[in-house]
Image (cartoon, rainbow, N blue to C red; front, side, top):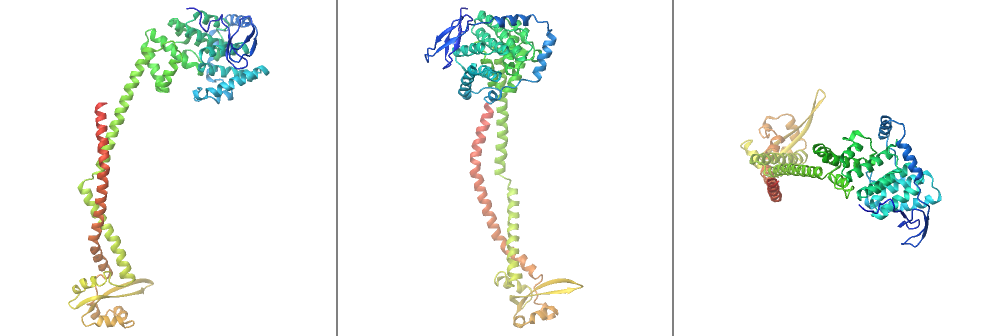
Length: 487
C-alpha cells in the first residue's frame, strides 16, 4: 500500500498558537499555519537517541522470566493517573460530553510546556494526549501524537506515543510506516505501560497482516498469559480473541467474549471492537455472542411476562373473593359495628344519663315480659357497697307498675335507694333481669339491621370499585398472555 496520513516520511505537527495540524519538513524550519496564519518554528526531527536506546533495550541481558516478574508486580499495583486527568474520566473512560473540557485542558497544558516542561506538566500533557486522540479527526490525531513525541522529554512517554502512531498506521494499512514508528521503541521494556503499548502495537500490526500466530505469540492464549496495563487490556483482549477465532479456536473466543459481555454489557464490548476499525475483529464470535445475548434477552422477557401474567391473575383473583368470604366479612362487619355502637349507646344513655336508651320504646317492649302489670318507663338506681375493703358498684333497673308505686318511690328522696338496698320483696318483682346488661344486649340487636345496611353498602361500594379496577387489569392480562404466547 502507498503512503498514508501516518507515513513516517511525513511530519505533521500542531500549530503552537491554535493547535491546528500543519506539515513541517523533517529538517525543521519555519511553517505558517493555514488556519491562524501564525508562524511556528520547528527543530529538526531527531530519533537517533531513541533508536540507540531501543537497540540497547533489545540487547539487554535481563531474562524474560525476570522481566515478566517485574511486569506482573506492576500489574498488581496500577500506576494512578494525575488527579486533573482522572477527574475528567467516568468509569475509566472520557465521555463524549467532556471532550471539549479535556481539549481545553490539553491546549492549556501545551502552553505550560513552553514555559516550564517540568515532569508534572509533561505527565499531564502526555495523559491528556493519550486520552483525547481517539476523539480527534484523523489528521488532528496524527498531529497531536507526533507533536507530543517531539515535545515530551520522557523516553517512556515517547515510547507509548510512537506505539500509538504505529497502531494508527497499521489500521490504515501502512505497514512500512508502522514498522518505522516502532523502530525507535524498546521491544523489551520493564515498565508495564510501555510493554503493553508495544504489545498492542505489534498485535495490531500482526492482525492487520493476518499473522494471527504472531498475535497470540505477543498477547498469549489466555488473559493470564501476559500482564497488561488496565487501560489497554480490553483492546489487547479483542485482538487476541480475533486471532483465536482465526486459528480455529472459536469456542474459546466465543466463551471469553461472552464472559466480557456478561461483565460489561454488549454495548461496551461492541464499542471496544469498533475502536479497532477499520479492522473487522471477532466477527464470528461477536455474532454468536449477540445471538446468545438475544436468546437470553428473549428468555428473560418470557420469564418476566410469565411473572406478570401470574401477578395479574393473582390481583384479579383478589378482586373477586369467594362468596363465602364475602358472607363472613358481612357478618363480622355487622357484629363489630353493632357491638361498637350498641355498647356505646347503652353506656351513655343507661349508665350515665340513666334513661331508656330507646327513649321509652325499650321499656315498653321489655317491661310487659318482666311481670303482668309491669310497664315503662324504667327507673335506675345505682350504689356502691364495701365488704372486707373491696368496693362493688351496683346498678339496677326497675319497671314501673300499673298502680304507680315504683314511680312514687323513685320520686321520694332516697326512697328507691332504700328499697333497693334492703332487697324489698315487693320491689324485686319489678326488677329487670340482667339489668343494664340485658338492655345492652337487646339494644345491640336493635342496631344490628342498621349495621347490616351500613356494612352491605360498604361492601357494595367496594364491589363496584373492584369491578372498575378489574376491567383494565383484564385487558392488561389479555395483552400479557398474548405476548407470552408470541414469545
